[in-house]
Image: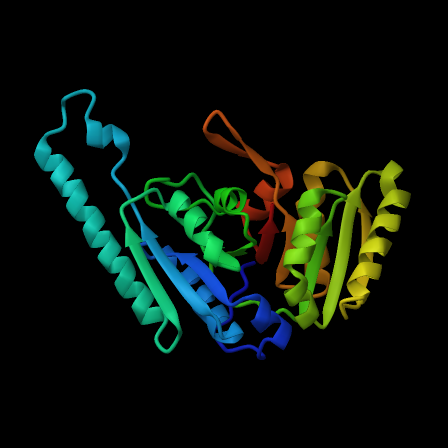
Length: 291
C-alpha cells in the first residue's frame, strides 16, 4: 500500500515551522522526480519554509576519459548536450511545482550525492525517495540511504506515490543506539505535531525487560517536550523488524515511521543495515531517517 495525499493537511505547529526553515530536494528531469517534488513543495508550504531545489548530473568518468579509444568526440558532445538538456528540464519541473513558494535553484554538472551533501549544510530537512528503491545511476540520481549517510541531516523518504504525511500519528522505531537517539531528536517537531505517537522496540525474548525500561525512559524524556507517547515491545527476529514496524504503523494509521539509519562505506560502495534496507526496499509509508 502506498499512501498519497493531494489535499492540504492541517497547518504545522509553531515548533515545526521554526525547526524546518529550509528544505532540500534533488530534482531530476524524468517522471521519477514528480512524487518527491510534490512532497517537498507541499511540506515547504506547510512549514512556510524555503525550498532549495538541486539538479546535478555528470558524465561518467569512463565515458569522459574513453580508456578504450572506441568512443568518438561526437559521442561525448552528445552526452554533454543531454546533461544540459536534463538540467534545464529539471529546472522547469521545479518552477512548475513550486509556484508561490520561497525557492532557490541550483543546477550543476557534478555528482548528485556530493552536491546534496555540500548544500545540506544550509538545510534542516532533505526530501528524498518518491520511487521504488533500486540500483541507481549515481551520476544522475541520488540514493536516499546514501544521502542520509553523507549529509548529516534528517532525510524524509517519500513512498513511490509521494504525497504529504498528515503527521497525526507517528511510529518511532527504538533501538538503544546513537542513530536512534539522533532520529528521535530530529523528529521532535513532527512528534509535537502528532496526535498519537507510538514508540516501538523489536527485540529477542531475552531482551524484553531491557526494552521496556528503555522505551519507558524515551517516553519520560518526550513528555518533557510536551509529547505524550505510547509504547509497544514486540518479540521477533531481526529480519522481521521492518515488518513489525509496518504492522504497528497500520494499527494506528500512522503514515510516518521514524528510524535511525544504519550503514557504512565499504571499498567505495555503501552497505546498509537490514532494517534501513527493508524500510526503503518497498516503502509503504513515509520514513524519516537519521544517522
